[in-house]
Image (cartoon, rainbow, N blue to C red; front, side, top):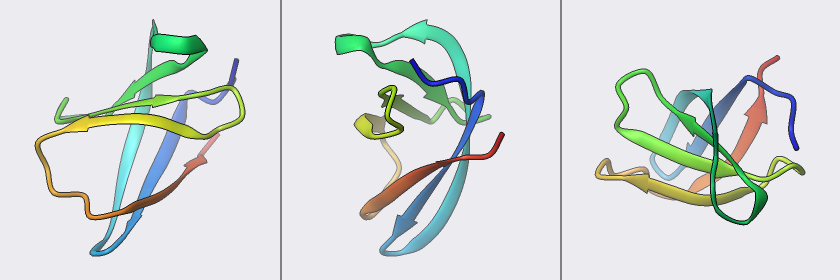
Length: 70
């Protein structure tokens, strides 16, 4: 499992950055759940740092990657 407490979600079209913080909850299939400060974006990231699911009503375009910030 990943040890990063925060990730920066980077979307490429349109360009946008969202800071995600670990909730401590486990998602499906061995992922960890991260949310933004507003709670509008929920992301499940696996132990390799790969995004598995994104749940949001916001238009994120195409998220390119999640980068650990710590």
